[in-house]
Structure formats: structure tokens, C-alpha cells
Length: 142
Image 1 (spheres, rainbow, N blue to C red):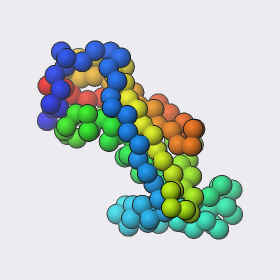
Image 2: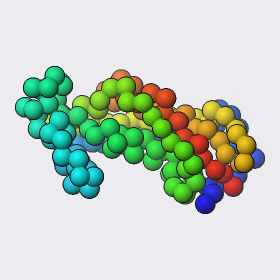
Image 3: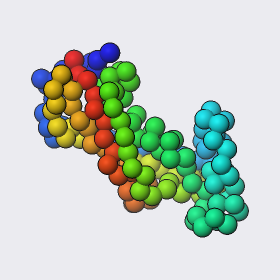
């Protein structure tokens, strides 16, 4: 599949609409159920602190999935993502309050490649700290 955005209409430096994604403890419990990842660092504050974490943290794959939403929303077609990878640099700490945490994601077209594909570089932060490094997606445009 291909995106609804034309390759010829995109330039290097094109910025994707930035988005913010709230994360609460309830979100983590729902994700654990969907993914089957019930590691207690994602729901048990006492356990998370015992293993040296500041608090409960979001699942890395959840953080990665939220970040790519900036790209798939821009594309209008998740099937246009050809390749996607990240490095986990810092955890998203999710306090036990009504606000939880916020993952803020922005993206920019970093390169135009062959076959109507472009590379999009993403920046994902939470609490002012970069949580994903080398976050890059290759997508096929129309």
C-alpha cells in the first residue's frame, strides 16, 4: 500500500504535525493485557523501585507504537510504513496520579530515497527528556 501523500510534494525538512500522547497507569494495564507483557515494572511501583527505577515505567514497545502514530496519521495509511526502528534511551516514567505522563512526538522528513520512499526521523520526549533515539521510519509515498 502507499500513502495518500505524493512523493513529489514532499521535501527534505518537511515537518509532520507534532502530537502528544497521555499515558496513565490504566493505559499500561490495558497495554499489558493486549500485549501479554505483565512485567511488574509496568504496574507495580514497589517492584519498580526495588529494581532501581524511579517509578513504574511504560512498556518500550508501547512508547515505540505511540511515536509511529505521528507518521501513520500523517500518511493516512499504516501499511505505507516499510521500515521502523528505534533505540530506547530513557524510560517513560508514569506516576500514579490523574495526569500520568505525556509522550511528545515530532517528526521531519530527513531524506528522499528511491522507489517513492522517504525517511522520517522522529523525536520523542517525556518530562523534557528524550526517550527514543535513532527513531526512524521509511515510508512509501504515492
